[in-house]
Image (cartoon, rainbow, N blue to C red; front, side, top):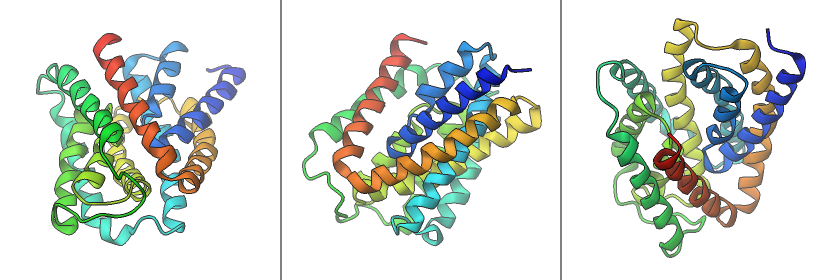
Length: 249
């Protein structure tokens, strides 16, 4: 049984993680180490983190949707693809060697950080898409969702990069669409953790309350400040994730 003071502290951590996650992704950089520090096993920490983070992600989705930054109807095929990809990835992780990802993913995250740092004209304005949104976003959703199921770190950065580079969305709209697909890729993996009984529900519920507040404030902040806030946060989150995976495994 967790002490009430610990639950209160976890709620505050959930709020901070939800705020960061709603803008640039990477809230797990904050919440996961804290869960490990209070004595959770790695599996319990990952499962509880998935359970609490999805609440903040959904709050961010609702906020972006109500402000007109995302069309849920247009994303239905991609939502299903992300969910299916994540579930398949969660099953596959037990049968494949993911060791190569521990090197490949940090390199990819550094490339993403470099792109958002040096690419010109990265604003909130939409640009010409390189690929058909209707045809290829479901494919991107499945592939990145599969990655989320087998490994996970940087999923939000990969989604945002795809929406900006391949599908021509402005950064705020890319962040909004990322939250939708990330929510369902998280849900796909969470189903397996729930069935296995790995989620520590008192901690997840306490953090979920914080996530509701943080996800709402984060989404509103992202909408208000747009690319000038989202862009540097994506760069920072991608680099911190890359360094953590390279040097603090």
